[in-house]
Length: 321
Image 1: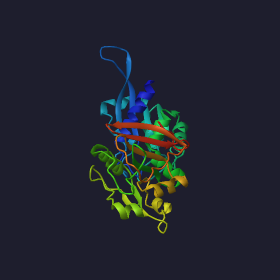
Image 2: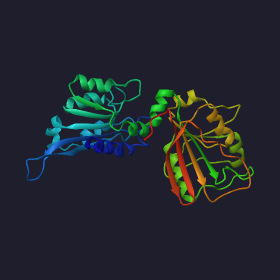
Image 3: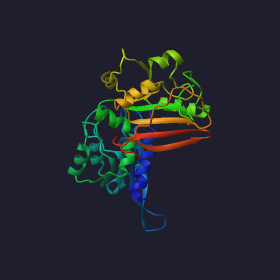
Image 4: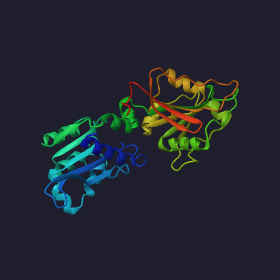
């Protein structure tokens, strides 16, 4: 791993801290690196003199917080410094001034960007503004990882709909219930992880039959955080994507039964599939789980004793890590 990759990895670590507070803005991390003399030596060594992330929507972006963390005695190093940022610095006035203008005013010599911002008001303009000011800009450092981190944000702005996660639990022999009756497939620990997922997404949806049969709460009672928007659909009350976009709903979990899940699969309305399999639980019959779409790619497998959670992503969607 190169030195630039190491610092971009740190940007990604920082960015993840803003998962809840930054929405509907993207998660962004920034690191400022400058050469300093080693103790009792004339040799120079690159060290981090400032870092930050986008903590809360409407407040300072990652670049602002990184510069604010630089100690007064280190500000003289900025003309020699490199700023690493996981997402292209903004170039427009929103709730805060453009970060590209701030970077230029601070006089850093080089900027390393993880990926270009798909948001229509940016889309390369921030990078161009930096280059026009004479700053050396490198683009695409750990680009796949940077785009994957903000896959919800990018999908929302590129496709004008939420990032859709289809989720179900199944027995070892591929059923999601026991002859039509609900069964406990998740373990206490994986149930907690499911509620953690709910806390990280904006909305959650089931079909009418699941709602009437199981009365699911669809809350985060086994985790900490805000409950997602609860939604129930059927043929008379279909999903209104435009309404979700107007509400800035960037991500949606679909936890319905087979019919609901397959309706999303058939329409191509999915970006991620998460399947939990209880490897020791079998039933003699019931509702068969949906098939994993052939255009998917397995991106992660997690094993928790008898339960395995497999995560798949669309091959043609946001780059996977």
